[in-house]
Length: 99
Image (cartoon, rainbow, N blue to C red; front, side):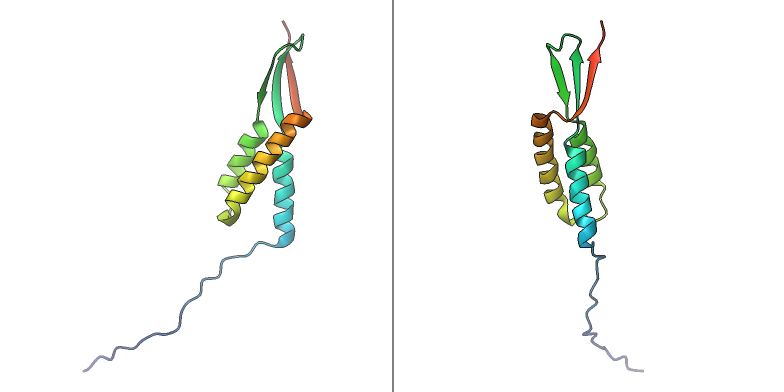
Protein backbone atom coordinates (compact mmCIF):
# COMPACT_ATOMS: atom_id res chain seq x y z
CA UNK A 1 0.00 0.00 0.00
CA UNK A 2 1.40 3.38 -0.99
CA UNK A 3 1.01 6.28 1.39
CA UNK A 4 0.43 9.65 -0.14
CA UNK A 5 1.81 12.76 1.37
CA UNK A 6 -0.78 15.48 1.46
CA UNK A 7 0.06 19.06 1.97
CA UNK A 8 -2.18 20.96 4.26
CA UNK A 9 -2.13 24.51 2.97
CA UNK A 10 -4.76 25.75 5.35
CA UNK A 11 -3.22 27.85 8.06
CA UNK A 12 -4.70 27.92 11.47
CA UNK A 13 -5.10 31.46 12.63
CA UNK A 14 -5.17 31.69 16.38
CA UNK A 15 -7.55 34.35 17.51
CA UNK A 16 -6.64 36.05 20.73
CA UNK A 17 -9.54 37.35 22.75
CA UNK A 18 -9.83 41.07 22.16
CA UNK A 19 -10.37 43.57 24.90
CA UNK A 20 -13.23 46.00 24.42
CA UNK A 21 -12.46 49.72 24.26
CA UNK A 22 -14.63 50.50 27.27
CA UNK A 23 -12.81 47.95 29.40
CA UNK A 24 -9.44 49.33 28.30
CA UNK A 25 -10.44 52.89 29.24
CA UNK A 26 -11.79 51.67 32.58
CA UNK A 27 -8.48 49.93 33.26
CA UNK A 28 -6.56 53.13 32.48
CA UNK A 29 -8.76 55.13 34.86
CA UNK A 30 -8.29 52.52 37.58
CA UNK A 31 -4.51 52.55 37.09
CA UNK A 32 -4.50 56.34 37.45
CA UNK A 33 -6.57 56.21 40.65
CA UNK A 34 -4.59 53.36 42.20
CA UNK A 35 -1.21 54.68 41.06
CA UNK A 36 -1.72 58.09 42.64
CA UNK A 37 -2.18 56.71 46.16
CA UNK A 38 0.63 57.30 48.66
CA UNK A 39 1.08 56.42 52.32
CA UNK A 40 2.92 59.13 54.23
CA UNK A 41 4.32 58.38 57.66
CA UNK A 42 4.84 61.47 59.80
CA UNK A 43 5.55 62.48 63.37
CA UNK A 44 3.15 64.66 65.38
CA UNK A 45 5.06 67.87 64.71
CA UNK A 46 4.92 67.16 60.94
CA UNK A 47 8.65 67.88 60.66
CA UNK A 48 9.53 64.60 58.90
CA UNK A 49 7.55 62.63 56.38
CA UNK A 50 8.36 59.29 54.83
CA UNK A 51 6.40 58.83 51.59
CA UNK A 52 5.69 55.27 50.42
CA UNK A 53 4.26 54.76 46.90
CA UNK A 54 1.66 52.14 47.84
CA UNK A 55 -0.40 52.68 44.68
CA UNK A 56 2.60 52.11 42.44
CA UNK A 57 3.38 48.83 44.18
CA UNK A 58 -0.22 47.57 44.08
CA UNK A 59 -0.73 48.77 40.49
CA UNK A 60 2.46 47.04 39.36
CA UNK A 61 1.21 43.79 40.84
CA UNK A 62 -2.08 44.23 38.96
CA UNK A 63 -0.23 44.96 35.70
CA UNK A 64 2.03 41.92 36.08
CA UNK A 65 -0.93 39.57 36.52
CA UNK A 66 -3.13 41.09 33.83
CA UNK A 67 -4.75 38.65 31.39
CA UNK A 68 -4.04 40.87 28.37
CA UNK A 69 -0.30 41.46 28.69
CA UNK A 70 0.02 43.20 25.35
CA UNK A 71 -0.29 46.67 26.87
CA UNK A 72 1.97 46.15 29.90
CA UNK A 73 4.44 48.90 28.92
CA UNK A 74 1.62 51.41 28.56
CA UNK A 75 0.17 50.41 31.93
CA UNK A 76 3.56 50.87 33.62
CA UNK A 77 3.94 54.32 32.04
CA UNK A 78 0.47 55.32 33.23
CA UNK A 79 1.28 54.07 36.74
CA UNK A 80 4.50 56.11 36.86
CA UNK A 81 2.78 59.28 35.69
CA UNK A 82 -0.04 58.77 38.19
CA UNK A 83 2.52 58.16 40.94
CA UNK A 84 4.24 61.48 40.23
CA UNK A 85 0.88 63.24 40.02
CA UNK A 86 -0.16 61.76 43.37
CA UNK A 87 3.12 62.74 45.00
CA UNK A 88 2.77 66.39 44.07
CA UNK A 89 -0.96 66.62 44.73
CA UNK A 90 -0.64 64.99 48.19
CA UNK A 91 -3.18 62.23 47.62
CA UNK A 92 -3.30 59.17 49.78
CA UNK A 93 -3.15 58.35 53.44
CA UNK A 94 -1.28 60.34 56.13
CA UNK A 95 -0.35 58.39 59.23
CA UNK A 96 1.03 60.33 62.20
CA UNK A 97 2.90 58.59 64.98
CA UNK A 98 1.99 59.64 68.49
CA UNK A 99 4.84 59.90 71.01
